[in-house]
Image (cartoon, one colour):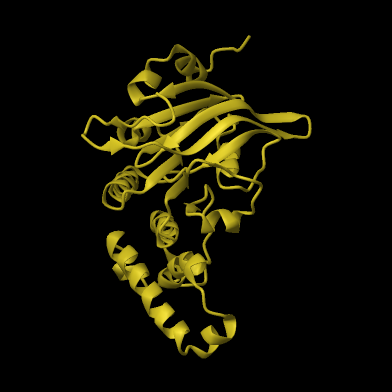
Length: 271
């Protein structure tokens, strides 16, 4: 499969060309190599999972994708263009949004206000106009609020829209964080362990929302997840990392039958 190929999933969805390409990425922290010479792509319209045991380098890779880390070697390509070193807010303006392994919400603010912060990259009027709330700022506020209300309806959290998120159960906080990312209307959505700490019912709900985001909005999704049952159910393709190296890449069935992947998850000793 080359850079211009598309493919059709088992459920009939057409997955397009690569929107993100990681080419021979190596990331070091002092004398520690977190990622070693890894290449893979993320294709338009797919759900792409990044998996591996603890310490495999998955979160470091996600931080390279969203520009928080800059690799010492290799290249990141986005929509066919080599990406230069950029700050995370510049990456966000390119259409990449993410959630975090540890919930990063404004606990004293309401669900609505937290999700509204996801619209910051779409706000063009100046601070003074926003403070006075007149002219273009007023029209902009109304337009952004409409987008946020649609996200709230989509995630079925109307009942908690005015509740401070610090008072919400964990599962709802994770849903609000997803809502904040969706409010940015991303082209590429990065999810860092979206099911972490959830019970079975909450995982089922989150899985459904992720698939609906992909299906209804056409959003390309890359996620890190430890629950292999979830990964095998929702991912189109899976890249597997272990000790900073790539040991598998393919469909869920291909990865499931990869002996190197099986050994890594069973804790087989490395030579």
